[in-house]
Length: 138
Image 1 (cartoon, rainbow, N blue to C red):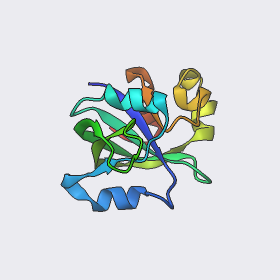
Image 2: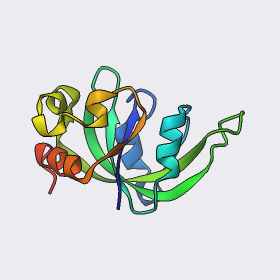
Image 3: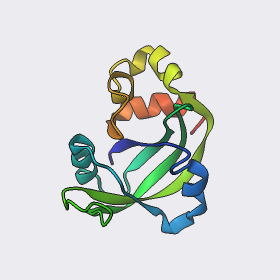
């Protein structure tokens, strides 16, 4: 299993909206960055990801599961980009802010800390454990 982080502006697509989709989940579409595209192409069903509210909030608020692997994104007229399907798994009990992550020495090399603008990014197993502990997730 691999771990990821999905970023979304809460006014565009929020954690509450993701949770409301239930077990059927929702396509993670609209990604127009080649590195993020490559990350999504590497995803497999069952992989887990943090759901991160970007913008003013800048915090990890939930955990999602990849339920559908990479396929073309019908919202992309160029045909260059794709999407994966994700469903909400659980809330992060204590949201982990970007400031919290930057202050944690064990997260110094995390993509979120070094390249916070990337919309879909990998998370190492060690980073996953640290963030889960910080967020009160067992």
